[in-house]
Length: 131
Image 1 (cartoon, rainbow, N blue to C red):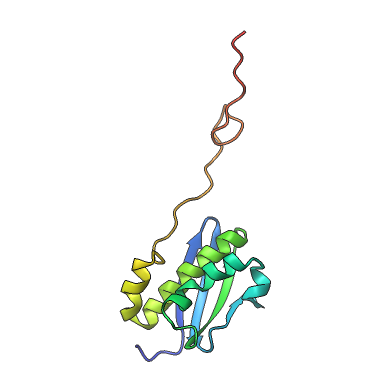
Image 2: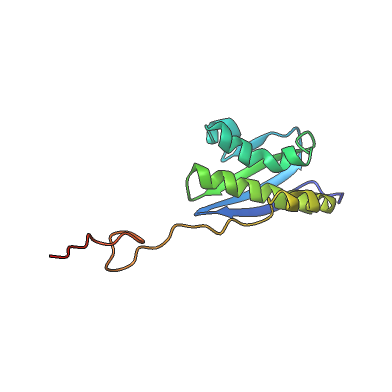
């Protein structure tokens, strides 16, 4: 492990951008100045956000400070997860195979599709009338 006090990383998901600062601590995740339970009220999203720490058994070694912009709570959870995984690799490169096998280092490229002209939404066309 590299002897550095803080590790920075950026994670993105949909329109959300998470900037994470990983520091030695007790596994606490602070999101925009609030605890994770307050920022992400749903338990499944809390689980997604903290998965890299749980998977690598580093929750007792690191705490994360997250600054989030854009998107909604679902995008926030994915962005936090990716950013924490990237910061863990900066802290300890030996964790890379574990995180890669779990799929936590892959940026989820699915974003909202743009609306096309002549259509009502991205793919919904006006109702067709034969006569």
